[in-house]
Length: 540
Image 1 (cartoon, rainbow, N blue to C red):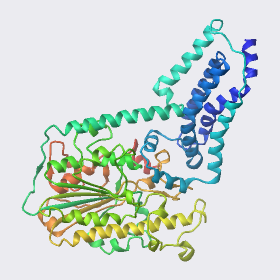
Image 2 (cartoon, rainbow, N blue to C red; image 1 turned 90 degrees about the horizontal axis):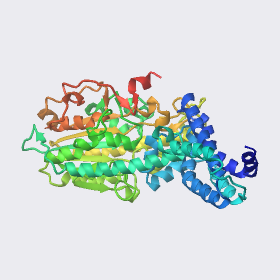
Image 3 (tube, rainbow, N blue to C red; image 1 turned 30 degrees about the vertical axis):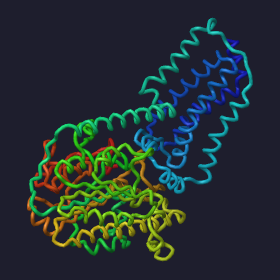
Image 4 (cartoon, one colour; image 1 turned 120 degrees about the vertical axis):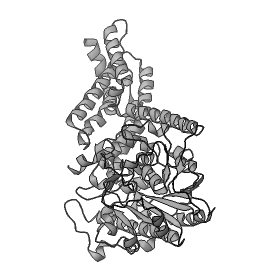
């Protein structure tokens, strides 16, 4: 034992290095607002055991081996560490599985805008210091004596067994930030590969989809998906700033739903849900059952995807496999323009094959952070220095008021774009056309704390209260007296495929009329946002 203490005295820098790598972030988890005392304690205990076990194993290493091992630990831990630490410093939460997965699918442009909004000098300084210091420590390490395994076999076995248990037992390893990061990445890649193969395979098998209201007049269904839009900042929903002057002028022809929530508060899991028949308790349906574009393809529709959010390519998303099933795909994000870039392509899609039924899905960049990038200069209408609309309080400081102005300006521009899409449909006159608009999720904007954005780790009702409205042409409505419009119905966009199928009048073995928003047989069901029941969220 004396020999062990003697060696440890010579390894002060090594001890500090291991403490820094394994324990700094776990102890900082005390700051995380999304962890209970039990979860924080468990994380700290597991990482202390890992720290002690690796330290004991280092007693059996030569100086050269030790430097190699520590360099490897540094390389594999520094990227996850800086990500977790940065998020902890500016959002006060520890990243969870869905958010980690989203990191693997975030494109460089989106990442840049995210950093522009959130990073400040203190976060940059803290993260830089965190990344540089351990590299310096490895370089300064000096030689020390080592133990022999033969004389201290029990100690070696205990330490090695503890390390292996922490690394390979999933429920334990998820408490070690960099192990959790890479385990999540591997699981994500395996899942995407399995999904891609499974969805391609199911295209080879028959699946009957019938059109119950087919006639000589084609119909066009347009689904417009917004981004990060809160109904709390929309004039259509009573917001006192006139952020929807154009759509409000059409208020009499719009069916504005008042109680709609998304299945998650991040784009990727939302899109994976709304495009499929997947359920909260049955994620395997993502592979086993057909998705939106598949159903409409089989029903004889010509299907279009027009997106101002990137998809496909080396930085694709885990729902690209669903988007690629559209017969005509247009990724306009590479043009790096505002959302009106979709209008020209949309008009062309309407004119193509006019005798065909069409499903056109438009995915906007909408009100995605950073908000000031979401609209042209001429839409910078709202300025609190002039209208004094926003009043400072405990969580709205003079520094963040411009952010609210920018968000409202982005809502104003979204009003212009969506109204243009709707006008283009109205110009078709007596055609059978309909439009469904909703946002993937909402946005919290200093509503009750000093925070703007969306993060599942600190989920609130404000991130879930999304706009949802429907427009139906007169000819479409006259042809479908079975369509029920009740804007007060409680609804989750997790059931979107059923509702769009109902609107189109297509039927298939998995169709559930109780889950369609427009069905006379609609039955409200439990609504989940991630793993949270919506009723539990609003009760907080």
